[in-house]
Length: 175
Image 1: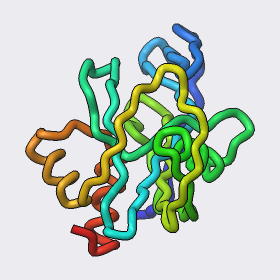
Image 2: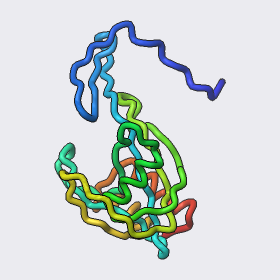
Image 3: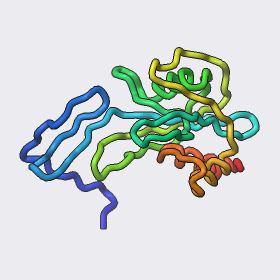
């Protein structure tokens, strides 16, 4: 058995149901609903004490506040690394040295949203204006506490937050 990916043949018909700023909904072959989504980044930022930078914000899609690793969309013409620097500056007023940790699809059963997760170290102050629609509270938490809160549902997060916290605990030895 080969580990090489098997590509799906192209759809014989595609109908656009919705084409918005962030997502495009397609119906392929009158059967498959596919969400096309801009690429995104998430950042695992660790301070000198090994605490993980998280942001608390309201997420309208699920109707509640989440605690997440800083994250955001990749703007037109940006590289993923440039987007990671910008998002960290906008959401937390920080910048740092970036290293790519991993890349993954958020939910490949219906969307092509692709996330690049970066590790930010050697953090320094560097503020860019926040997006007009964002109200963010910055939190510094031990990565093991983030994982514990996600596990027992005292925190609500995202796949990229789980990925970042797991990396910090397993690879960084941070607790």
